[in-house]
Length: 143
Image 1 (spheres, rainbow, N blue to C red):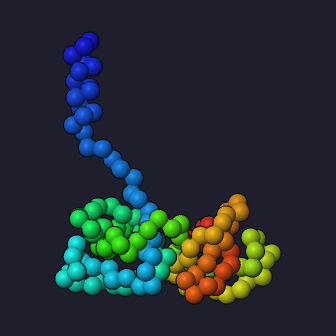
Image 2 (image 1 turned 60 degrees about the horizontal axis):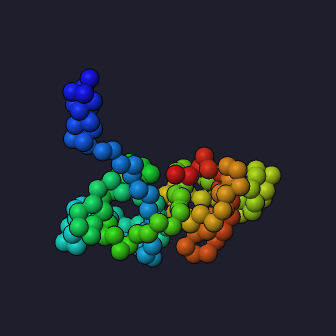
């Protein structure tokens, strides 16, 4: 029986440990997303402040991430922090004055717009855009 316990313990020690992806957000007004870890790598696209990412790998000061569409790229770690954020995942999201469908619609939002999370009320999230606009979104509309 000891050999079985020792074998299981050894398997646990040599097995790769699965880590959950760490959610972070862009903290700069805009940031370049690169094809690899380094300032000389090609710029794939740009994102704006509060854009959420899930870090899946690190290389020095660079982070490889996946976004809400499953796209991946690299960003310098100085351009992100742990601010809670969301991004709209469809066109026509209704930013409301309060938490609930009976609240007036302030504006309709396109897919891919990032927001800082201010607070939650059930399935509703109070958000703020980098330009200062605030309102409420239902959690089914965001990632």
